[in-house]
Length: 306
Image (tube, rainbow, N blue to C red; front, top):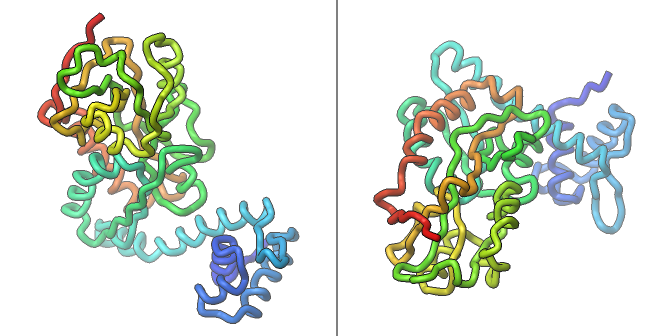
């Protein structure tokens, strides 16, 4: 039986994060020899090599990366133990809840939800990190134990991250975005950004013979809006990103065949049952409809023609 102590798990996580025994020792306030001893103990108890040592520092092996992920999740459960016990007695969630969200969700979905959360659970402290919606994205942060809940773009085909609790909040449409007064917006150059890359949207794009290859990768949806407002091109953007649209930007509905994306949340099975995450999910569900319904005052929506 593997019987790792909490202090050994903390050392394991620190070394994996810092890639160095010396740096991990500084972070933890320990000596390097104490860190080395703890890692040797972890390797002895698990029966595998967790780090490759050398002049490069300490690189986690595949086993080490997996062990560090599990260690972060175990440590988080230990951290929530006291809050859960007190909450069971008081009915109030307390402590901290760690949230990973991509930019437009953090800007438009989270504020109302966090206001509701603060009103209902004043002892709960949210911690929000902005994570690009590319690669493993926010789901990866949750799976790796760095976030308790992630606001994510869910796969339109239903292929959700293995081992995580996943639920949709709403589905948002994409629209054609172009400068106000443009007589033929579809003829303009395309401005895009890396995160605008859901598989369903890309398939839809591939079927549209009027969409050119992007001439500018703006890096961020807010930069795309600024460029479109300056007359530098057109873009195809999701609803939440358009809530930042300046007055010089017009938004045209792409019609009934327009692409959409599912926005939802991901968490781990163990954290899904905690008071803090359950309270956050309730707040998200209660405020998400207002986000989907917003927009009429933020941008002008016209119907696509031709």
